[in-house]
Length: 293
Image (cartoon, rainbow, N blue to C red):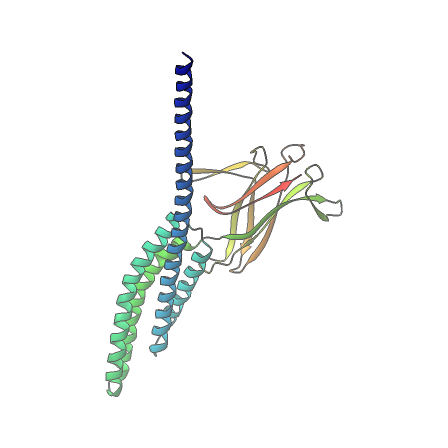
């Protein structure tokens, strides 16, 4: 009877050991797969960036080789640079890369047509330079070139629409003591903090029109409460709870912005980790965290 009991115990321990090893093997594989996916996304982002830089170089060559390059061509080149800047600071995820790659492929088809026409027109202009009717030929050339740019700009407009959002960098949150004089003193002590100050820089994006803009700031305390106004706003199928709406005048340049958030009611701030998120409408553009002791 005792031998049977020992045998059953050994079998149970064997099964437990096999399950433990299988779980460890699965966890290691999952971790490796996550890192591999991250590396692949970064590599694909670099490929898209290289493709956009190559496209910008083609624009530069077309402008340099064509004596009648007009403002539309120069503006198209600036928008390509704006797209490159936007991609450089964008989040690296499958949805973002898929959008950039799809728009780039459509844009490349249009650009191939434009450059082919540009080469043809350049050769034709050289041949007709000695013709008595050269003035009329140059006028027709400009008209054809402008028509090609209209096709190119249509494709660019689709890319710009998806890339023209404001992003933020250097997001920071910290407690402050507010003196009666208005002077602010940073503090890491939860009980001494009168307010939480949130500061960030709105990054320059040439694709965004200057004027009044707004971002939604969300501050979550250690107990998962949303501080400040804790109001709601709905964008299509998504509802966002926010602490404060940051409103500012954007002038196509980097802009430093700071906002204040208070504790709920008359309570002191909780000790622990705070999470700060900044949203451009429904899109999360930056996140950070800090600790109050």
